[in-house]
Length: 506
Image (tube, rainbow, N blue to C red):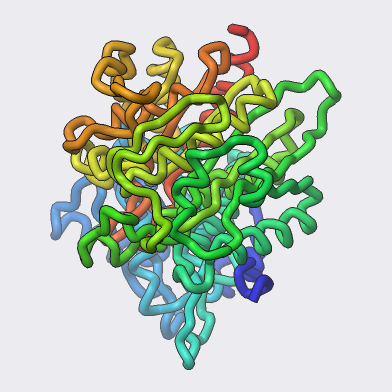
């Protein structure tokens, strides 16, 4: 069972050709994906296979930016050339979305070998277009878990050729794509396959492969450490292997390297507990561990990039079940940092397990903590599934947090975190109430609740994954489960250098 939970698929073989598209090099290609400017000069169309016909279609259909064109490759019975028209002002999201549309057109063909190129784009525009096409191709080549008695024919792309005269480095794309695939794989697993116990076994197997250290805090250890918030959620479950898993990457630097904390909500199934969910709301609650999948997948991506700093990943693995011992509204429990919590609604379990996981992460005195969670429906209501929400205890970071979303194509919006919200979370008989009885602003109140478990001296950002799933996919991801968060985190840490910013400000 454990091996089955670790994706065994190999990445397509990638050939990087340091020159522009050469039509003679397409002999072994089943599909060619080319991104061009929406106003490509007439003479440039000659650089494309079937260029004259494609231009005539472009003129006939009066195509605009974002449109795609396709034609059969000369001499190929089933080969395709697919052209995507990119606007000069296209954002990262728009470029990824165009790449995703182009990849969708290859589905019926099921190409084994694809080629990626640009024509008429230069510099950063060409680089961004190729990066989007590569990210989309790697996502399309990855097959999510299937339990059908008859499996598909495995016709995902096996070879990817990149025509790149700019000789760009796509290491971050490869790393974040591998992480995204892992996050989508785990989130897609049904709840009877990915339980807290099997999740731990899977992560331990992955840790052995990657050279990570692993420590597990089971319920007995958590009880000794006073982790009453986490344990309250698990009261309705039998001994299902619930606990907090600590996975550590030691980094390639020296002992003075900063420390990053990643925290993820890993509710493997959420019934709502005593405040039982309705059928429609409960149906897909196997995905409620999506935050932990993003945290673990980000750890994998950073390992691939051989970052010099240490990374501690804390996964809060549990289920929120019903039963005679399940926690109840108006219970009072105490978290591991000594904060007493008055329970209001048992379906607000995510912030409960994160409270102790964040407190554990903070004890290591990291330079920065990032947490990921499919936490609130209020965030989805506020943003839809196209964005995710971000909250931070560093108001001056709003610009960099949103810039990472724009640059990565995984867009985020920063919500307020003013201290006066805390007045509404005051309890008559505990330090804090878990949530409000109604749902207004719940994403903000959840973030303010979580801030009680991260000391103010530690920089912290919380991502409420409203975009974890979206019907039809999002950007270059054409599956309902998006794996949103890995590209964002890699950009935030590698391109925006948020960890360095946190360390310089300390």
